Length: 178
Image 1 (cartoon, rainbow, N blue to C red):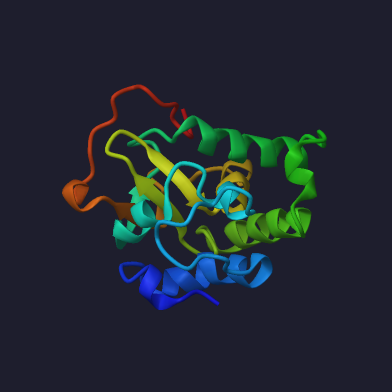
Image 2 (cartoon, rainbow, N blue to C red; image 1 turned 90 degrees about the horizontal axis):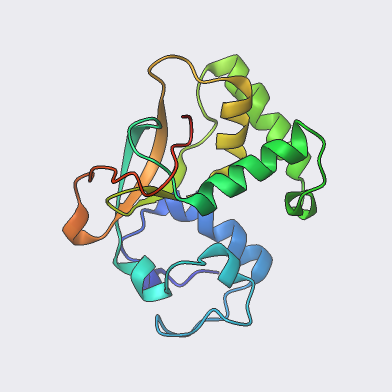
């Protein structure tokens, strides 16, 4: 589904976890890194970056302290929306996601049993915040179940080549667990 030439920096494990299932569902309409996502469902998957920007990120699998750096407002809104939908029973736009209730409940059950996420999340480290690309259900379930003290989430972290080390938060975004 996904031409490997598009994302040479994304490890195959991350492609299989994140992008391949979406490409299977939505198809892959792009011929070049300069194609626009407008008019495709992919605009919801990458609302803040182009295909070229995504292809240039360098990815590292690590464990991140969710309290050490804020998440972008869009990331927080998605996680909070899932909690409102599945815990509080509110009708949100997240109710339209395929198998959303089952995914949330399965993640919560896994976290309760194993004390960890069932799979790494995928975030872009902007230098000042994390932008959550994949793992909304996992993080929402983790917050619902409760974070153990000192918990560090397994994550694939994408950074621009010039931002390979974690930056410091500037207070411009909101902390996920604060």
